[in-house]
Length: 331
Image (cartoon, rainbow, N blue to C red):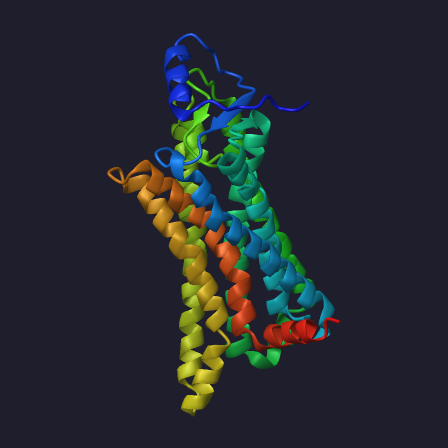
């Protein structure tokens, strides 16, 4: 059934929610209303332009990576398998959030079904946790390739890579389950208006008229546990990698070996820096304007997914050469 067009202004929405919040029961809301970026409503169309460009680059870049790895047998190696996992995760993450953002900016389509909102919330946290795990798996691949190159093919066999991929998917899927489960059990008796462009966890549960400390503490615990463990593993891996690199006899050998880690280091920075910045501004930046919080949260979703295929496409010779070959042989 087609949703009823929603064309009220933000001021109307706010006045509606304030006037009805004491009399309307949202304990089981059928829909939520996403405001987009409050305070920047007049600029929504302009903001949508870079968002649309970033989403287009994300789709083209990640599908190109998948196509090149699939069609080039020489790229059927652990590093490129992990890269394909990263590409699929980025595609799912962006597809679950960006189309709704653009529909808000372009068509003022602010309504989202309650179940769809919780589904979006689940996929966001699932994909982010999976992406962090894939970055760790890539660090493991670089560690074995540099510190124990003779055993790389036997250690990181196809079977072992598949087990790592399965573990990453299971970890992300299981850890993300409590987010929508807890959000669904809270009663919503205040308002159904979310001041965001997507169903961000805290933005949703803050609407509940109940003690939401369980949701808040769980979100903090998972963030510290996942990021803490993953960053610690990556740090230990690169300490060992740097030791192995500095033990090489010549400067050229050291630079060449370190260059094989360049793409992965860029992906690490592109993923964790926006995540850390968004997390810190959301939790501790109480004096930061709300629209800045939301813009940073959007960059956290959009930026890594767009940059990952660009980084590997530009810095990895095998992918770059294969892409050039495909382009030059188009008839």
